Image (cartoon, rainbow, N blue to C red; front, side, top):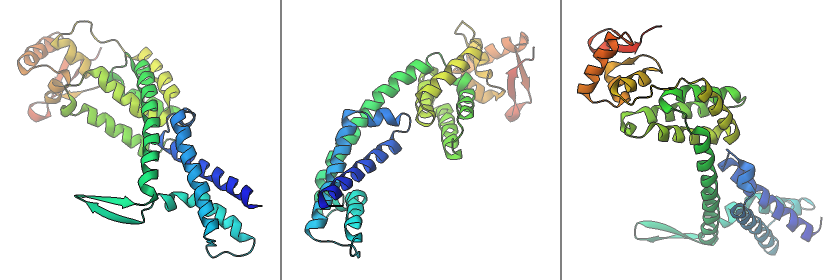
Length: 282
């Protein structure tokens, strides 16, 4: 293998490393993320860095402990896979105020790569927002979040326990009182974005379509009673939590609960701190 061919191989390896980085970052649709103009810039810069690293290695005759025919191969591998370490490192650091600024090739390369990566991210964000809002339109977070997550992960064959836990944590966070003021549909969109990152847009769309088909419609009137019934569709709840979930003030909650219990729509079990409400059977 002559020097020119070796340089081409080093350049190609640098491009592959860049593509692998993009694929690992944008897991929901890696092909679309890579097949974009900002991604092309990111890959080109990385490939050029590998080619430049190979030129420097040859110019300074760095052998990395190898000899004979192994030298050129070693130089190609180091340039292709190690250019990031070479060019993204700093020759020395200087302190400017409270910040430590690296001086060296990294100062330029990191700015270029960060800008390209951010451009890819912004482009993907537009696609993700559009696809997710279309898929999750009409999906109630309170009534369908758990079912949708279970369905999505059931459709997948290689989802890790860490990914499942991350989605469960996201659902719990969105159900926290801190986010009680957010509209149900917004919570649904946020959950959809999290699920799309793991399962992809197509799986999310199919799962959301089927979940919507089997989820009962909420009561048409937006009254304290209808909100309470909707909150209980997911199962029994402590009455204190039910009042928060339903988004009903305490006075209206008390009177609405009396009407629902009297009409045998809701059943109360326990008392005091253990008091729970649930939809009446039948």
